[in-house]
Length: 331
Image (spheres, helix red, strand yellow):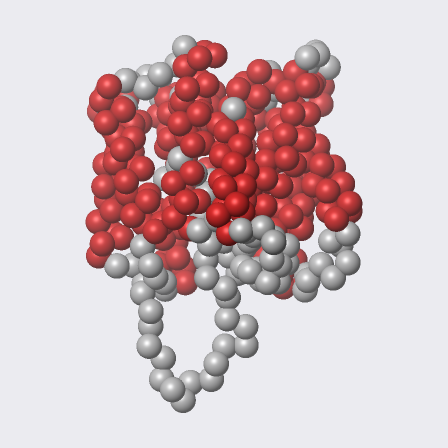
């Protein structure tokens, strides 16, 4: 029998590998030379092939657990995820991989705020305070100055806005997917990428792909590596790790992205911008790891039909009975 520590070590290695792959995603996007809509279209196309083959090999279509409601939620989450990718990749073009990635990593705060606004989830004073700290860090990292709002070139400002909107869409997808229980995360992810194919078809410019050449290799990599392999690694790791370790390891993604952006393109954030990074990291960890407030219910109240398992990961781990609730960034 495999010991708990051995399983956790294996999960740590798997999640670290997945987050390192996440950090290289921006390089694949830029090197493909394709437009953001084309990049995402071919990512979901090749990603669907990779995830579909994996699910078939594991025999998970049998007893899939989908109901019309759960399938509808998965489709809605897919709409948010697909356009989240488009906006993030557009942000790469208008800012840099480093800046866009750090700004995008404000996702946990949107999940908390949206949960409070849409589902009346309790927002404590402590969480609200940490969210303020995070957005102070965001202002520093973005490097936005008053002159950016009055100057003629608003490209950089647009890129920051795109990264923020991408994070907002990711937060919406998280809240939707969180409510799907009893379905393996691989199947949910497969539905979400399949949704992207007809959704993005009207926006894809196939004529622009005629001179792509070696860029096809980068696009195939986005589907097979950054969607197929990366997701399989993440979902396997989540089943083995506690929430605290998942939250900490998630920051491997922006760290690798910043190093890769500097190593390949010479982009780096300035000293003042760098001061905002630890604020976002600390606030994200505090918000993610704070235990939910237990609400005492009257003893006469009926018990819920199916209480969800404790939140431990992004989407659900291997056990299909757990809810799909992201905790680490999925790009």
